[in-house]
Length: 264
Image (cartoon, rainbow, N blue to C red; front, side, top):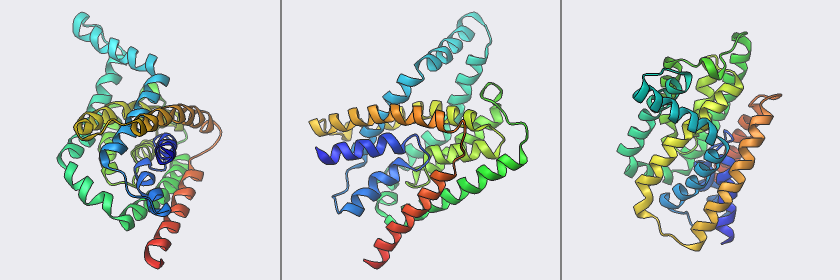
């Protein structure tokens, strides 16, 4: 039960902050000497954070959905209809790759501590450099209302990298969005909205492998509560700060894991 609570906290924090929840769900148990949880259990925790993002962005998703319905039934075009289909398009690359490589993710990527740690550090460096590069080169940044189909598609393609734990779904999409000139707030909001279909798809894919126990339920609830707090924190944090603190943390944590892996 304690393990479920701790992993739920890790998932709630890691899913929305660009530090890779999947990597932490593997590396923290490794660091503490715990037995690794299954991919199905990790996906259950992701479901908790899916509920969190739906709770925070329910009005946004409702507007997106009704905008798409209005287009189909009434021929009425709108920003919400456009953004709904942008999110659909952006979801396809990661969803398709995750479906095709499900066994590889479970049996290879999740077993390589050195690979996960390296990916964690590399993406941390890229986030740090990319965020600073964007601040320097884009004097006028794209806000959420003006995201283009090209930007949405490229962000979606980058999300496919997150099949390797450590790269981080939110980290890769935020980095890509920033490199294409999206503002910090636009990159973060689009990333949060984009998490809904991809996590929902992963949950459906793994639902048959999940054992519904009290520990699983507690982990989901904890991930949900902490996820809500993490979303609110990051939305406020980026108003005055960049992503460098998360990048530095990723590198430091990765170094600690690599030292343990190669030296102890």
